[in-house]
Length: 206
Image (cartoon, rainbow, N blue to C red; front, side, top):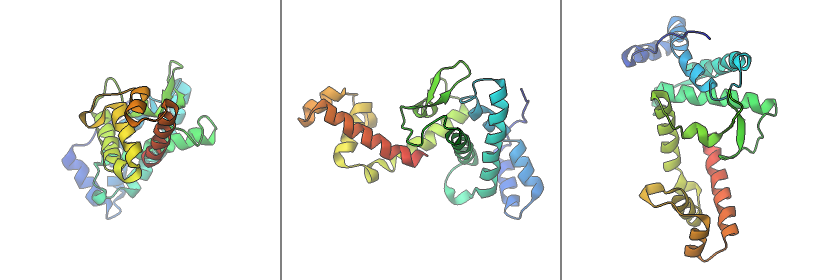
């Protein structure tokens, strides 16, 4: 496996991003080389073997290059957050083009397999049992996006069901049957509303 350069300090990263505005090729190359570990980190979630790992690193690198080329400081995100999103998007587009995941993927449907052959779901990317710094950045960004868009995208009923179903905003988790009881509707109807709400949220995470 390749050994990648250590990440840049925040100060040096800011300097490179400033130089990049002037089309500085050396700054561009430095940002790419010192962020290759982001590519490797994201790729590990999708690769099922050494051969596929190499292929996905190449594809993920394209996403990183796109991130370096298109990042703007006024996006409100750290560069690493933005780069992870671009890398994941590039890899997911690759899987979709090979029909390894469907275009209508939801948070709880499989989008690939890990190196042990276990299915990977989109929710697994957002919620990791052993997060490191990169995971924290990605999760923090996803949760920020969801939190600031849920009320805008969802109906009051959809919002209520997701909040109670997954214990958001400090609420206690409830089963679909329990929620159905509070709303005086059927459990299957709650399930349909929940699925529809998750599909709405999936679109903004893509």
